[in-house]
Amino acid sequence: MTTLSKPVKAIVMDMDGTLLNEQDKISPITRDYLIGLEKQGVRLVLASGRSYTRLLGYASELEMDQHGGYLLEIDGVALYDLANQERTKFKTMSPEEIRGIFSYLTTQNAESQAMFDDGLFDFFTPEIYEKKKQIRQEQNLPDDFPWTAGPWNWLTDFRDGYGNLHYIQSADEISCPINKLQIMQEEKPLAELFERLQDKFSDSFAIYRTTPRQLEVLPFGYSKGMGIRKLMEKEGWDKDEVLVFGDGENDVSMFGEVTHSFAMGNAKSFVQKQASEVTGTNREDGIVQALKKLDI
Image (cartoon, rainbow, N blue to C red; front, side):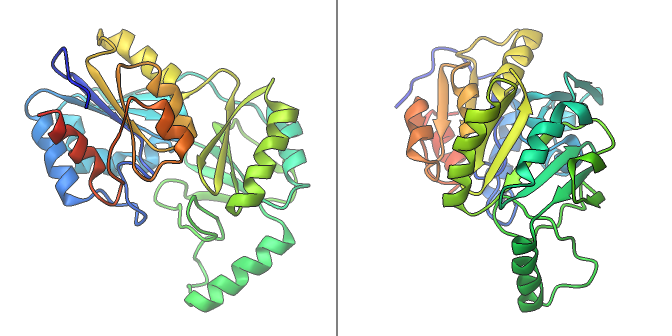
């Protein structure tokens, strides 16, 4: 097990599959433990593909605004200083920049979402539409429930952060700057699509697998790792004073920026191999397990 050479100044955590369970909740055990560390001077950083609109509620739950916490949003594209309520966005993509890749995605059997700060443009194929209709009937969902897919299922309500929803049929309907793209499909076809996207577009965009059924496309050169590096420089944190927890391939870039990195037990083997340690799953309070082993 890792031993610490310096006191921990910050704990950086991915959200989906790491801090959150499949119900998008922070367990009371993990919440209370993290708040206790904040009261001892440890800073918390939520590093997520989500924008601040979908992170502020969790930050409030963790009392991060009272203790100088940060939101590393959109996989490193933006940084939100909670104590000062200051947001820095490093990059957006114009509709023209993403038109080629989004047009290609409309020819694939997948759901593609172009995300901006408080909304998204959503495209899905007729085949996926039929699947969604069946699920809506089986679950007896209300008429106003969104049609958007999420990282774990074909129907997810994003209105808590992305209330401005547009269902589109082509890339030409995207009408504002975009933070990132999300692509949803079942695990096997999504893995195949990931390879095709890497072959065609990796020279122009950063493409990551974030969960088994979700890909994300960011501006070229951007990553959570780059964002953490900027934040560590800003705060003067050394690489052995920061702990990082994650479960997705988009978290691996953060592992390389610190001495002490932890992959969740539910992470794929590739991700686990990139971390310095593996802890319990997101269902088992894996973050707290690791912290207790370190006597933090």
